[in-house]
Amino acid sequence: MKPLVNLEGKVGLITGIANEKSISTGVAEACAEAGAKLVITYQNDKTRAFIEPVVNRLGVEDVYLLDVTRPETLADVHEKIAARHGKLDFAIHSMAFAKRDDLHGRVVDTSPDGFAMAMDVSTHSFVRLAKMVEPLLERAGGGSLVTMTYLGSEKVIPNYGVMGLCKAALEAATRYMAFELGGKNIRVNAVSPGPLMTRAASGIAGFDGLMATAVERSPMHALVTPEDIGALTAFLVSDAGRLVTGGVHFVDAGYNIMA
Image 1 (cartoon, rainbow, N blue to C red):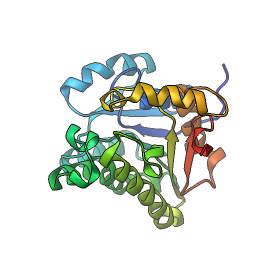
Image 2: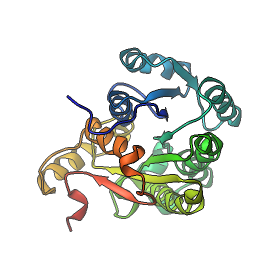
Image 3: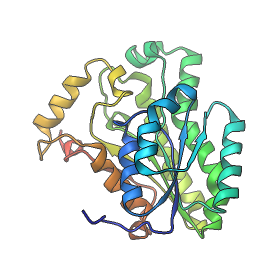
């Protein structure tokens, strides 16, 4: 099938792939099919083994360690991209974490350290990633940053807990960075998929019920797939999305519009 957008000649950084069913896997596949040269990161040696099938299938040569809690790994990825490609055209942020008790418990019971950790990994890591890639995007004459959010940022989703606060802050960061980086022709957007079963989602109690409700109540009565998310993200990072910035873009069969 012919790609919907053209990313020939572009270099993109994809973070957050955990396995073949990850949101980032769908994004990587869509971008690769559109012609982009990809750089893929992994969190640690254990996760490296799980992403190997994706790396091999897409023929990705640039695979680097990136643990956002370790600043030296951000610096190392920057140096390697600069040395190998000299520039970067887009970067995808798809990382989030919260302690199980803070995720499933009441927000008012969130521990200070748990709150700080969730915000650091789920929200401020996008800010740090943007700062790291900014000079590489400038070398390309501008580019695109995309992060992954969820409806729990603006609606109360049972068992989503502190992550809802993190996603709300993430969307605010998207808007502020779009303003700050727009003068450098760098666009910043958030993609908000409907519920789909990923490794991260499996840790949310009652998630099967969320998916069933999404099918029942969405106007199109369908669940989103990683391929759907990849198609939207590939558009946002392509020249076709050259004036799209600062937004939260839903891909959820319309579920977000329902009362």
